Length: 253
Length: 384
Image (cartoon, rainbow over all chains, first blue to last red; front, side, top):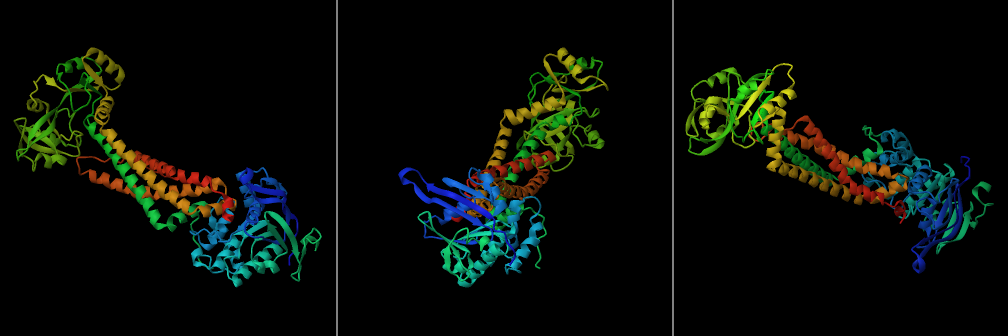
């Protein structure tokens, strides 16, 4: 395994998020504080409505919290406008979605390369073809580059989506139920890729999931309930979990 | 490694192209809309230009420096009378080198099958050639010396019942003989121009030999056109002394603006622009709505608003370019066919360029609704 630095990638402090006002206000998150580090794969569990998606949106600079502070790679996200947040996302974040969200009109390699075009719009997309082809081969998708998404299986589509997220070498990768639509074999393969992304590439990976079979692939398990962070545990090498602390953080293991 | 596409397109342009071609039915509808719109605008504008050129064709084709008209003449086809002695008045100015009279007057033409058609008799001096129809050779002009000789426009042969040279016809009860044909001299009023000598024309329309309709003046080299015009105008206050350009403009204004004919053509062209805008707007908007999740995904990935706008604008501009390419060919075909018709569709280069600009503007306007919708795309919606 490569040496990976475990610097702090994103930190949220006493973050709350409300929808609506007054008595009808819904509290999606209540004073959540959290720090995510490079080289760490974190799973985010919780029942529906517990605030997982909202936390994911805030971590990925997609949504402002109602209260609290967010720092992404030492940069304040709180107070940024829409375009500044978009710039932070394209520089630092990668996203993987439950339903893959591939662009249906583009070929597989183009779906991957377009991520580079979002970051650097100048020049032809084919300049990034080699990079996309290499990444797709690494993810076991060699030979499928010229296909369209509707010609792939669910597992293949999800790996294309991961390749797209990986292409810009993000420091933070956020995945929303990436294995929910996959069978067990495809799900394990995707989990292994996400694990490698954290441990080999040094990415901070956060996965929102209900799938407990992913725990062996993770370093950390966070659980939300009613908008509060109710548990934060480290996954030991033997698969047992113990409370997460700075002492047990990957950098200090 | 499988082959890769070699088109060096940017990400936004490639995505725009693929978005269009991925939904062929919708793309076809967009293209049909743009083609229809370009063809409609092009033909209407071509007709407008053609009408303008036709309306002032008689003025534009005479090589005179100044025209002397009966006071208040609004167009070349309908005019009062001028006394021929005005020629002497004009020639009394040293800068005037030559003065020729031109007679233009409506008359009735009886066809061989007994129908009556309206024609516009043009009487000129074949010796000076001033006022002669363009493109007519010396032999044809000499043929006008034959008794009762007239020249008829070939495009109107059928309308006038003319089948051959030498055919004898009747104009206002007078005998006339077709001794030659003119080529491509249309009339805005659809009363064909029939050319003959001034004296014969005066006989056909019952003018006295001392009467005419216009005086066409040629100036000596180096003469100051405006100064001469002003002096002549001062000397002949009951006439209008104008340059051919002024008279051509006045004639076009009368037929296209005063009669409302130009407005009708412009209205139809505007309608084409509107229809095209609506079709492009509707198809682009529905395509954008269908792909809203994809746009939200790109926005989540960090795409700027400008980057997303470029996709929709590129779709609009690609539709414009393809639609224009087909549409302009249709307009060109219409222009070519009109050469054999009494109604001219004109497609000068500037009209083609204007059409290209209108098409671009139309497609950009069509993209406006989609761009507004994209501005409201919530990147966080991809995680809901």
